[in-house]
Amino acid sequence: MTSKAQLACRVCGLIQIEPPWGKDGNSPNYEICDCCGVEFGYEDSSLTGIKNYRKKWLQTGKNWVSKDDMPENWNVDEQLKNIPVQYT
Ligand SMILES: [Zn+2]
Image: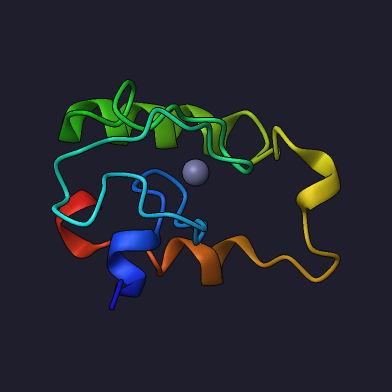
């Protein structure tokens, strides 16, 4: 089974269809997060990178790069809770 922690974007916490860093947590798939727009395996490849990207995303309005995928009742604070604690 794939856990929620494996499926969450490390930057914004959006649950992905496939684990962004693979089942071993070490094999990024280089997809783009629909929400924050991070490329898995690129900007999120270090804790500093994750924190910087998240900070910038939060400060610039928490915009979805794929606006059509944004749920009507989207709650950023709830989503951010999905981020595994080691990446916060
Ligand atoms: Zn994201």
